[in-house]
Structures are given as C-alpha cells and as structure tokens.
Length: 314
Image (cartoon, rainbow, N blue to C red; front, side, top):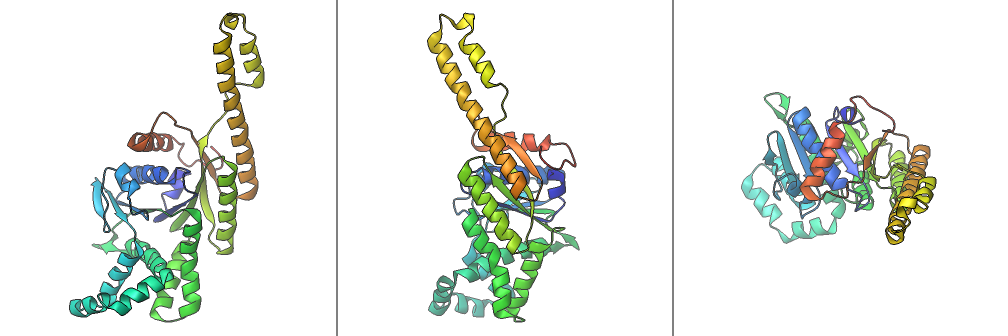
C-alpha cells in the first residue's frame, strides 16, 4: 500500500492522540526521501516532535533535516502572514497591515481563517515549482488530533460557500479540489486496537465521506497477533518441567493470557474496521522495545519491507 500512497503529492495522516501518528509520519517521510525524491515533512505541533525524530529542529519554514528531506512546523498566523506577503508585495504596506491592532484582533477573532491558510500553505508548497519541476515530490502532514483535523479539513468548503468567487473563495476552491483529488492527495488514518481509538477512526471516516474526501489507507498500529492458544497456556501450567517452579509458571501464564486478550482485541478491531472503513488496511507490530528515533527507524524498516504493490490487509 505504501508505494501506492507515495504516488500522491500530498499525504495527510489523521488519528487520535497517542496512536503513533507522528512516528509513522516521520517514518513515511524518511522512506519517501530515499525512494521518491525531495520530501517535505510538515507538522502542526509547536513542540516539533516529528522534526526531532528526523534529527531536525523547529522551524516555520522548510529546513533541511537530511538529504532530500526537509521539515517545518505549520502554524496558522505565520501561514496567513506569508500569504499576505504574496498578495501585498510592498514591504512597507505589509508591515503596516501586519503590525496594526486591527489586524491582530482580526486574526485572533477568526481562527477559521488561520486554519484555511494552513491548508493554503500545503497547497502552495504542492504547487511550487523550481526550473519547471515541482519543488517537492512528496509532502507529508502530521495533522492535529482527529477533532481538530476535521475542523481543518472542513474549512475550505465552508470558505468557498461563504466567500463565493472572491479571492479567498477561489483559493478555498483550489484547496478543496486538492483534498478531493485522490490522484494528488491521500488521507491516511492511523489507529490502535483500543475501542476508543477504533470508534474515533470510524467516525472520522464517516465525516470524511460527508465531505467527499475518501480515506486512501489505514494503518492499524500495535497489532498483536497470537502465536499460541489457550490450550498452550494450559499445557504450560500442567507441564512436569514447571512442577517445582509454580510461581514462575503462574507468572508466565498470566503474561501469556494478557497477550491472548490483546490478540483477541486486535482481531475484533480489524474485523470492525474492515466492515466499516472502505480502504486498504495495513497492520504494524507493537515495537515495545523501541522508542524515539529508534522506534521511527524500526517502523520505517517494517514499512520498507512491505511487498511492493500490496493492497488489502497485510
């Protein structure tokens, strides 16, 4: 599935907080830079955790993190100021506008405008050309948590209806067209098997359907397959070899039973997702021995080993 996703210019990853979305975004960006070409990894978190995973630092403009890989933090007020620089070429006039109290009040009173400009920045970077060629082969956005992300994605369509054929309305139409163009843009859900995360993922998919923005893929993180059965646990408990090690046997059986419960939860989650979400699903393991950049590298290695052209559930 990853090869198919990386054929798009823009990849937007959505998911509940804590499901591993930032690590997965960093891993995909790292792979894209090596497989495809110049890649821009964008994030909305002011702490810039994705940049840190990729060995970079917080920056509100693209900054090189590695060969063919740049990172940046996407922030509404700065995106709006950049847009104004494009439409107000005279520097003195721009500073007069941006420095006025009325402008500051307007920006803080209209958060929807900042959200629109954030998506406008993605559209601008996707359309940017150097020597007639796109500056970025792939742009990856680690979007905010699901609720905020959906508000972000609704804005172009609301702005188009509100502003019509005005300058803002036309810009919103371009952004909305990009989001709905599955040949250029892929929305990717990230979840874990926990019931709350699964429920939020299904709700997100339904909201996107209403916006006519289909999901292009779904990653089920922390997938726990079962390598043994309840009968295996019983045999261990009754094993003659464990007769004089009852405390050890009980501990091992308790751990194994927890693993079985997690595997059962994963199977239920996968069946529910397959019945509710119409897109390819890829499962990723629970790499509990890794964290930080090491975890990102491990996830990238797992993604890199996925058979090319794979679809459906891995």
